[in-house]
Length: 246
Ligand code: SF4
Ligand code: SF4
Image (cartoon, rainbow, N blue to C red; front, side, top):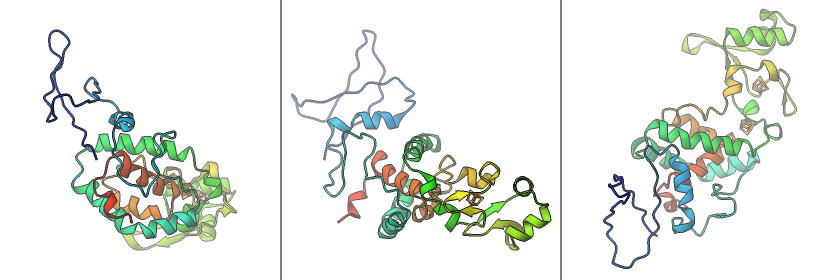
């Protein structure tokens, strides 16, 4: 496996840059030049794929035609749950690495996560899944309750009695239980008025590192999260990945 080297140098007067590399004379190398700051380091990593034998892993597909998609997309929530169980130790080890060792700052990390999340979300049809609506409870605030009651033509009290549970923990809060009583088949009866938490699920545009326990837990439930975490292992070049695959 080749080790890519990263240099930060200044362009000299005549437009030249000098790089002293620990390789024998005559070794062919490929050099990418970008102007700092690099807006999207993830693109740079992907651009380097073709020239480097980085994925020393025969057990996984690297589909050069797909480019960014390093792993097979898994959309079936039952298959996702099975694979998440199989990869549970691996995923927690990856989470520890992100949290404790990986040197991207939060902003840089999130630019990779957001890009992967947008790409994978576009490939998954939530109306064929609805697993989050079946498996997770949803906290609703006063504005959510008012909007939902209005959408259903009910008073707030009638809506609370018919659909919500009151949780005494954390100072008290209203919850839509799981499976959600507002789910019909795979569709939400109140989609336009759905709670803020439902709109933001699976929360991949929020700070991944700070919420990493929740994100790894969601690999069991949400195909988008499962696939994003799998892609992150490649995109961020997690060095311990091969340790877990047989
Ligand atoms: S309110 Fe709608 S989107 Fe939210 S959990 Fe229930 S069915 Fe799903
Ligand atoms: S957000 Fe995730 S769990 Fe929810 S329906 Fe979409 S893919 Fe399924």
